[in-house]
Length: 359
Image (tube, rainbow, N blue to C red; front, top):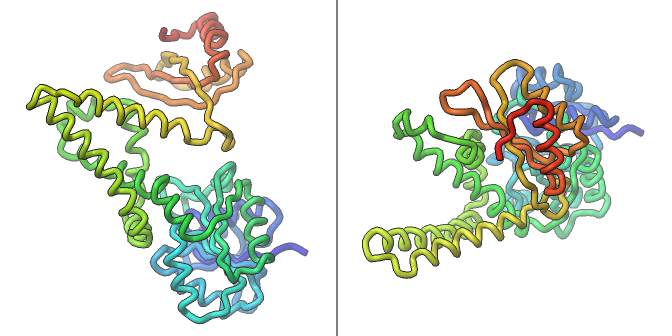
């Protein structure tokens, strides 16, 4: 029998999940306080409009973080035989509020897909949003094994890699790998507001990489940070100590001859190397040491597509790609990340085809 999933909340995550589940044989019904949002989600292929008398097998709550717990409680009361989960990025405070409501919660299992975009809203939805992404399943002590299995099945059906952990462990983890990086990107991007255009015009790919997520929805992130305030604060205290040490070292270089300052800066940068090396590589595997082949790409229609085609024809597996536009020039620089053994063959192949490869 086809599993019936009711998605409550048709923003980016809810609509993307509906599309992905429909594409994988699930029956999806859609519910949202906004008639426009729910009809748009339907038109995007995320499912059918929900009817009140049609009981689901699973309810996925994809509501804003500050109202999630209330929607979960209402779903548990309305459909006592359905498994209920949510996709909020904070788990412990939501679980605490659900249990405090006194509702039968054995069919509730929290979850969190580690997926998103800088754009929000229904129109930004994509059916492949969860492909290859981690999806944390967060049962509580009273969750049934059947409920946990059902949520796990949904996550794997849309291409995610499931991780199971308790709520407090989840919140501590995402504070470090998601919430504080969002704050850091926003803080750095905020320093650009008063810079003259001549300075901002010098920005390269490094600044774009560091500040990319600063374009995220501030209202959503205010709710997320408030919901995980304790764990985020603890990580920020550690960051604050690192920043204080760097400032002290720079003060020493400027004002006091700098004895010991270079060592402090070096240690911070080396620690950054070690931390970056721990970030999982392709498909969640152990990180690989990729090298870059930098190619000059003319700013003209089809040039990038031709380059990627030539890379494929050379039999090289492209691991990552960054494009940096040349300042005041009608060219860009494509940094193609490949395994070290592929650098020389790719360099030679592209040069033979007329590309200008930087040494």
